[in-house]
Figure: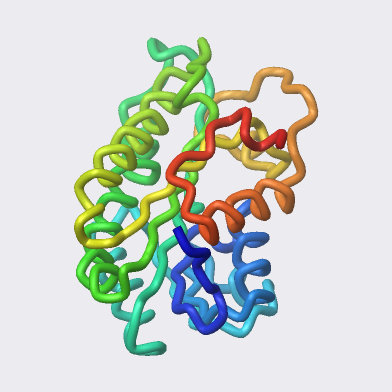
Length: 229
């Protein structure tokens, strides 16, 4: 498979103000991509200092995906790629996890990305583009005290694997990235619970670089162990 050129490519990055998303956005910008950056907080997007189309959107809203894709098409007339780096985490036993926390985990980590991908597929079919979703190591190695979070990430990975087959004929490459614990600060901002003691994680800029490399070469899965390569 030929390497994908990022120069001039119209790419959406959601969760672009987050710990990994910001580095993916910066690396794509350095490679010459035309970016549409989305996050809940527009001020956080503006603080990145990246020349891009900025969209304030919450993936928990079923309309957000259509809004983001429409913004990218309005700005660049095409859509060549979608990187979903948005996500939330929660800790604690399932018995102690509130209904609204489980709902938020699945809305942000699963349903939002599905709605977004569905909105993007027609344009990505035209460009024979790509989708890259950031799942997590817990999709492979679920941990006690993280059942709901692990289930949401495993659901995203399952969707990616199905879409790899479903979208192959359309020429769309789907990449599922499952990085180990990364020093993004996300564990310090859970929507519920308290993070267990964690060993030092990977540098987010290194994780981002590995994901961008996978996009260029067309890798379909980046398992946790691949981030140590």
